Image (tube, rainbow, N blue to C red; front, side, top):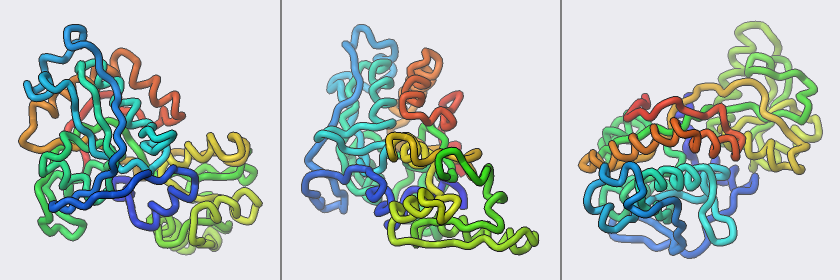
Amino acid sequence: MTASNTRRTTAARSRIVAVGAIAVAGSLMLTACGDQTSSGTSESGGTKASSAALFDKLPKKYQDSKVIKVGTDAAYAPMEYEEGGKIVGIDPDIAAALGTQLGVKFQFTSGTFDGLISSLNTGRQDIVMSAMSDTKARQQGLDDKGKKVGEGVDFVDYFTSGVSLLVKKGNPENIKSLDDLCGKKVAVQRGTIYEDTFKTQAAKCSKDGKGKLTIEAFDTDAEAQTRVKSGGAVADLNDYPVAAHIAKTAGGGKDFEVAGDQTGAGPFGIAVDKDNAQLRDALKDALNAIIKNGEYAKVLEKWDVKNSAVTEATVNAGK
């Protein structure tokens, strides 16, 4: 299972809330298009138009309004989550840096993840920035079975994420990869793609004659973490930025650490309607600008996710 398919199952959503991502506040409104958004918003970035290097690259609509409306699902710390009534995280911080280059505000509104692309297609939002994996299916408007379910979108790829092992602080079992789990016991949330990854590895351990990998599945990821912390299991598994956030925050950073490299890394992209190519290209130029001037690196360093950096902006690079 690659990272491009990890965002988000229902079970994974409950896992993320369990590890401390603050749930979206406020009631959700259901529109005729099936798009759900919360009443809370957050704005990121922006400068006076006269001082913004890439302001002239934007379509006139955004030059006039000086606002780009962003759809997100603010329940996925540290990518985006609500804190003190404001949407914060990696995505809003990157958006703020992009806004400085473009001379506009990025106005975030939270809704349900599965309604974000429809909110883009209907014009309710201008872009989607929500740790959304760039996939060929989403580019073409297809579901996981290849059935046409809507309009496709373009992606400006700005972040790379795979899955990472979360181990007890100090890594007492010296776990560096999935292969190091053979003959050991792991903990994971039941029903997630992470449990599937462990099952695949268990079959590999057995085939290679390296010892049985025992999997303990729990209703929440918080329970799996507790099992690892107590020494009852050697590792848990999460998306890299989530694992890094847990390692940084749990027990004041004294409970866990991320072990080894990311597995199955793929791109997260800013989704843009295919009819809005000028905005897409302006975002691409702005991303390249903040990569070059170092603002992009500062954001990733702030959130301890430097391993997820891209070296240049790409469009529709997902598989």
